[in-house]
Length: 241
Image (cartoon, rainbow, N blue to C red; front, side):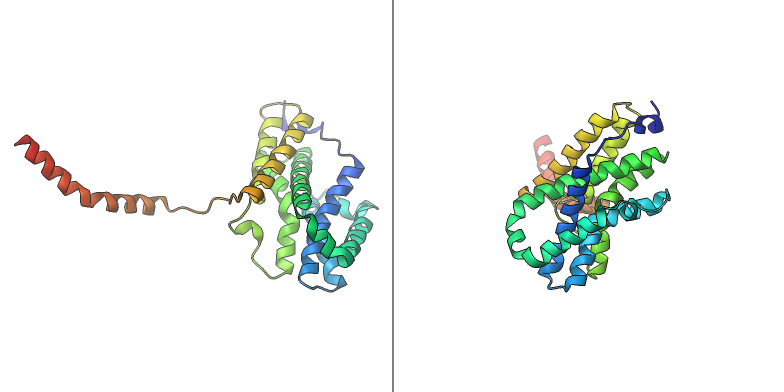
């Protein structure tokens, strides 16, 4: 089964679930703006980037017409209502941290699947499918961090975010492409995989791996081992005598 043929059967996301995912993304952005003491315009802007930023970037790159965030009549009003709720009830919503972590993780998995499947439908190669899937999941967070003039979360050590999306998009690309498995079950498995990785990394303190200098590490190990060599040779010589 070719990648394009496999992608012809995509995960049918109910409108309610799709809208809920956007609302959760908007909540995370709006809450961050409220904690920073931003005015209503800042809360609204970060809510839009959190809920719709990744999809906007995805649709611009795929060049399949106007972005869905602009053509769907429900998306922008839902984000605006969410921004208003976070503007007035940020303190109460901040108490729902555990619930928001789980919902945000599920949203990350759903956005990963939607982005990867849209890239497959566009006939893109596997590497591009992985890229678009990951970008859809974390693109809104990147735009948010740029607006806040801070280093993006995805380039800092911390809980799995982009790493979880990357692994999920890779799994979907392989399983629904070369492996020839049914796309809908694969999509459901990927959503659970991404969400589980994200939640466990937050709750258990897992951090994404950082760069390692393998030659430097090998040299340091050799340097630590060298002082013991002469003694070992002397002992060996004494035994042979």
